[in-house]
Image 1 (tube, rainbow, N blue to C red):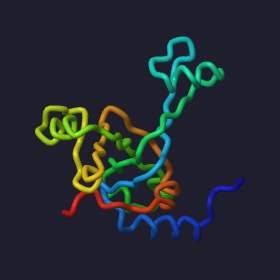
Image 2: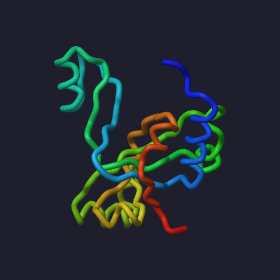
Image 3: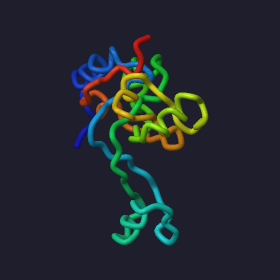
Image 4: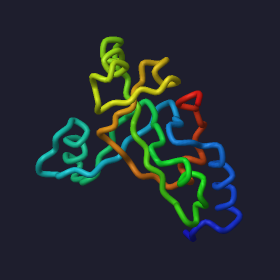
Length: 143
């Protein structure tokens, strides 16, 4: 397969024009990660290691875009990648702890928090901008 042509890159750039740092995508998604086959640390890693794979995936409830807005809206030919953090569902007690700043490995955004979803800052994944362009954007914050 060939690299996307100029018209395709322009479509990606246009699709990302309104995306901002902190915007989210909600729904069933998959967080991809590398693992050590001989020493898996999570259930997902163990399942991948059983298959002989050195990469695993974990289902998440969505992603928050961590990349700065100025880099999101730059041309995909110059900046083809975006960083995302997974959204995870928590109970009301954990949500309150995050709201109070007692869980610094998590972040709270108003829109996902309405669904008891918080941002897991311990994990980050790199995706090409063409992936983000296919997602339905949910603003994470009002301002």
